[in-house]
Length: 371
Ligand SMILES: *Cc1c(COP(=O)(O)O)cnc(C)c1O
Image (tube, rainbow, N blue to C red; front, top):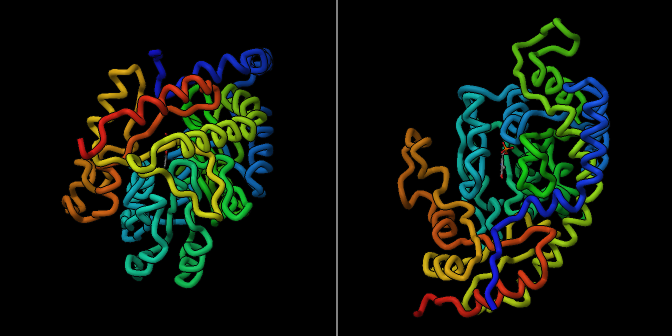
């Protein structure tokens, strides 16, 4: 039996909650108020509750969320911020946008997240912050990262763009450092129908500064205390996100169920399967496996109608955009190895068990490295 299974089906998520989204759409349109209104205020309060933080500030996207946190901490030219070598380039760009320098640190090979053991070697007198990423929806080892940060007096800014609802020792991502940036890009676990992002924090001073920075440096209309930006989460996206937030735990639960089925069904002699440390409860933004026969496997899956992706094909330090850092091939071998072997498999909350069984069957017959 043959089937078509896309890598991701965002429309299935829309259709499942269409009537609730229609109500939200109508409410916003009828209100006559489209930027910085009641929907945003309500979403900010609901998302702060969800994360277990005191404040949430909606912004234009995930990159802006991270950038505004660093900016609000006064991080700029001459400063350094530690970032994972193994991440999406947005983490690095947030640092570069402030005029500071991203300093990469290798991941733990089995979890793909930043290696706490290697942090100290990257710290010097210019270091201001550490930005761990909860890659693929699994929390980084935050207690150990926070210990190092506390010892050297550094801020910890979580890049939680892939980790909505993920747990670390029972606590939600977003509440694990000094501040966190979330993205609501449509494909994220909590995704809008356009761009969106948020900062969450317990730090009231930081929250006030970001509220001002996102809106031209002004908290009172036409009174500009600092040079700010235009980076706001609009009423329509906030209203849609409020609807989707009500479903997030359940949708994450379905992702967990599907991830468990992959872990049980895939042949672990052919594929290196994700490792979940006992302190992590991931939300499986991405389910990625590794094989040295990646190109052959991806082609075989494509021939059988199955979509896959690579997160990510080229690490930030090897991108032309970061040529100026002068870090060639071999600078970050663990990250480079992961980038060479990783494949992301189809997984979304509405994926059917039949679709998944088909993917598992095809994967277990795909060409292996020895062939
Ligand atoms: C998606 C993502 C971002 C950026 O979010 P945008 O909303 O697209 O700006 C940042 N960091 C990571 C790890 C991401 O996956």
